[in-house]
Each structure stands twice: as C-alpha cells, then as structure tokens.
Length: 236
Image 1 (cartoon, rainbow, N blue to C red):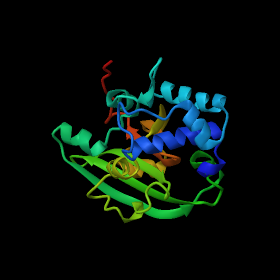
Image 2: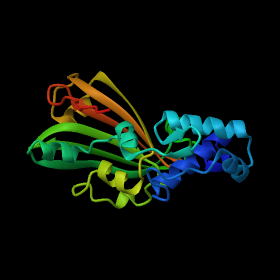
Image 3: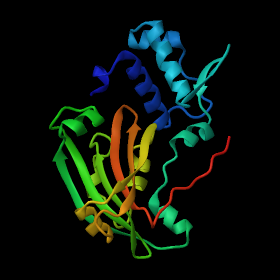
C-alpha cells in the first residue's frame, strides 16, 4: 500500500517515522504540533491525536504535558527495536562466522506475501535463503523476503561479506519490528540444509521489519534446537 493509500493516521505516523529514520529529527527534537500536522495533512485533530498516541505507545515519541511532543530518547527506541546480527553474536562468542548462499532472486509476491508487505499480488520482491555457520556448524537457516522500495540494491549484496540484517539496518533504518518464536520440526529440505535429521526440533523465529512508510523485510529464521538458545537482557 502506497503512503497516499494509507489511512490518514497511518500517513502521519509514517511521515514522523521517516523523518526520524532519515536523521532529520533526532532524540529530543520537537515534533510539529497537532494543529500543524492537522493543517499539513488536511485531516481532523482527532485523527492526528490518534497517530501521536500510537507513536507514544510504540516508544517513538514522548508526549510532555504542557510542552508538546519530542522524539524519544535513543535508549527508549532501541530497547523496543533491538535486532541482533548473527555475525556479531558469533564474533562475541569468539567464534568464526561463515555463510552458504542457497538462493538470491527476484520474485513475485503471492497473496500472503502481498498482504504482509501491503503490496498488490504479483508485486516484485527480493528473496534470499542463507545458512549461517558458527565454526563450521550450521546454526541458522535464514529465508528472507525484502521490499525493493526499502533496499533497491539488495540483490547486489555480497552475502559472504555482509549479512542481510547488517545491510538492512544500514540501508533501511528500522522504525518498527515484530516477531514470534515457536517450536517447529525441520522439513526434509531444511534438515539437509542445516545438516540435521528430518523432523529434528527447531526454534522458528518469524520477524518483520518496517522502515519509514514501507514494510521492509520478512524473515523466517530456523535454528536447530540443540545448537542455539535465545538470550538477552533488559534495562529500564
């Protein structure tokens, strides 16, 4: 869905997130008043208010009573949008990261992918499938679809030198992310790709990211259950 076809409140949200992701507005900078946004977009004050409330809940902006709205401090944004690059994870453990590239292609979105990316069915997407290794042992199968509007040069990337996650964080600055983690069983093909037995228990993360007005990426990350565990820390 193009920005012009988004609901009015979503257009306001997309505009503000784009200004932040492009570095036009930085942490602590004032966001235009609701009355200014109302005039800019030609919409009701109630619609603008809804957009600002949702941005505040998402941690993108901070509303200060009597002082207006400002871009949230970086620690607030990063705490909700932190995405780990598996290359960095492996290096932090003192091990060697390597990648096998299985698929890099342009494709057409089916109905399900079109719905996720808010595009029309048949729209062009990029697709990559990689296996990531830690000291020669496969620990992640990455099946990713990417919106060309967010990363037009994605297919030109040398995936042996740079991971998709690292590239996208640099070229499609993150404004939203959502994910789910569940248990699953490896299919015959996935088992071959990961060097495990068919039906072996795995951890499956499905993660979508948004950059400005676009859904940028949808990734299905499959981890052998006996080789990987998720960990992290939280700080208020």
